[in-house]
Image (cartoon, rainbow, N blue to C red):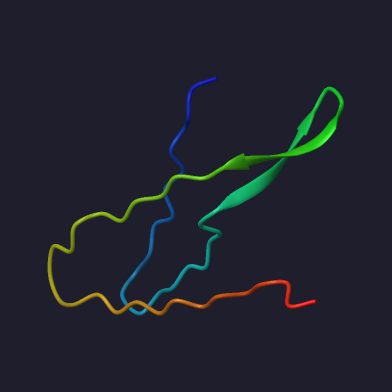
Length: 59
């Protein structure tokens, strides 16, 4: 299966939160994990600010 890009259009001041490791997919034998790839387009004007948040199972 080929990867298909999904574009999240943002206006000035907009934000998006997305997973960077894996996501659940329904398969014939139940749900399973698939790895994600992500990219960010080039900034054409202004500045880009980023914030990394790490959520983990600390049990």
